[in-house]
Amino acid sequence: MDTKYAYLIGSLFFLAIWLVLFIIRRKSRQEMLIISVVFLPAVPILEFLQIRDFWLPDYVWEKFFGIEDFIFAFAFAGIAAVVYDLISQNKTKPVEASEKISQKLWLPLLIFFGGVVFMVFAFFHLILAINTVYSLIIAFFMAGLYIILTRRDLLKNALVSGVLMSVIFFLFYMVFFLRLYPDIIARWWKLTELSGNLIFGLPAEEVAWAFAFGFMFGPLYEFIRNIKPNKL
Image (cartoon, rainbow, N blue to C red; front, side, top):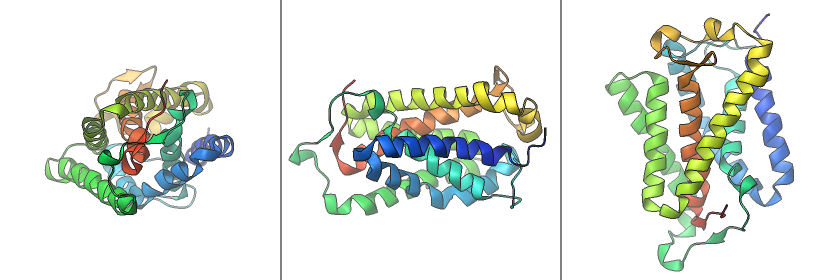
């Protein structure tokens, strides 16, 4: 089957989930929008690097990165930001005043935090010459670890978000994507650059990346805005 539109279809699949969550989670709309947007500036650079040692998908209009990358990054980040809230019960509430970082500084802090995560990724990938996807996994995991070491109450949020995002990603491939495009892994992914470990035909790195992504992005908004997480 022609895979020219496969990445676009997959990205729109996650955007549809994002839209559903945006509609039903009225109190989380600001969180979804902010976290979705914050990841976008790094997308062209990351995709340009990933085509060398991770994958090379088909784009509808561009060769090295395209609208598909932005749609997927926007949607996946927003989903990760609120996926924990979907299964939690209590309303969020501000942390104690003594624990607060000035609310006036939250946006610059978020931008700074994103810049630090990107520099950690750049160190592992550009300086230590570690594969792009492994460098991203390390950077996301280290950022998430910093969050939970600073805010122990966000540990459950980080872990649950990581597990749920990896499960969602895995089910997307198993139930939907690989059924439409059964040979797409061999065509797009640079398997010789990866570990070679497959989970039902899917590179293990994809599942690990989704977990690390959720592990960081799940509690990120609560961390930056000093909000206590919901309880399961």
